[in-house]
Length: 284
Image (cartoon, rainbow, N blue to C red; front, side, top):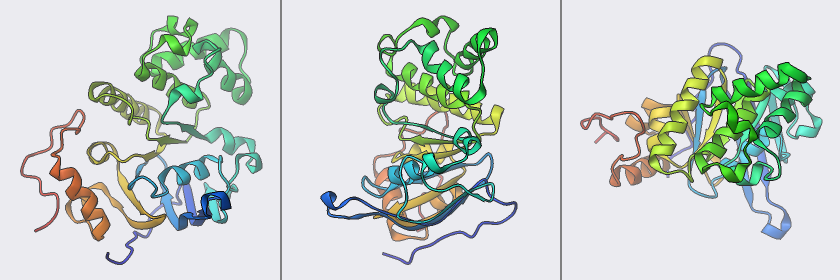
C-alpha cells in the first residue's frame, strides 16, 4: 500500500476540525484501535463522505463527532472552539448544532411515541417552543421531509422504513443544526427509496446550508452526493480529497482498490444521476 495521503485545509476557518483523534475498543474487545490519529476539516455547508470497509472506523468517527463516544486522544473543535469529545461536556449551543441520524431508525425512534411527540421533544428542549408555535413547527418539519401533516399522529411501526428515516432526519433538523452526522442512513433501503431520500437530503442541504458528515460504504452514492471524501482503512486516513480527484486520480492503493471493486460491479447505484459511460475511473 502507498503512503498515507492528505489534503491541507485552505480558505476560511472550518466549521469542524478534528486533530489526532484516536480511539481503541475496551479490553474485552482486545483493545484493538478503531481510529489512529485521524485529522480532517469540514467546511460550513460541505458534504464530506467517510468511506472504507467494515471495521475501518467510520461509525466510530461519526459517534465521536456527535459526542456519543469520547476519543482517547485528540482534539475536536467547532467554529474554532474546543468542544470536547463527549456530549455531556459540550456547551448547550454546540449540542444543538451537531446532530446525528443513525442507520436503523427502528432503534432510534421510540415505538411508544407518536411521530408528533418524537419531533416535539427537541423543539421543547432545545428551542423552548410550546403551544401553537410548537404545533406549527412540527407540521413544517414533516413538510420539510415530504411527509403529510397527519403523519404526526402515527406511530413508527405504522411507517415504512424510508418514512421512518425521514422522521429521524426531521428530528435532527428540529434543532436547526449546522452539522448532521449521517451514519449509513441509506444502507437498509432499496434503490428507489434510497434515491428519494438522497434527493431529499440534497434539497435540505441547499435550503438550509447544513454541513454533513456522510458515512457510507456505497461509492456510487458518494460519487453523486458528496463534495469531498475521507478514506479510512484500519482507523487511518488514507486519503482526503474532492470527489473528482478520488474517482479520477486516487493516490492511495487502498482507495484505488475500493473504486475498482465498485467499478467491477458497474455503477447501478448512481441515484438520480447518469454517469457518462466514458468517464474514466482510474487512470491507466
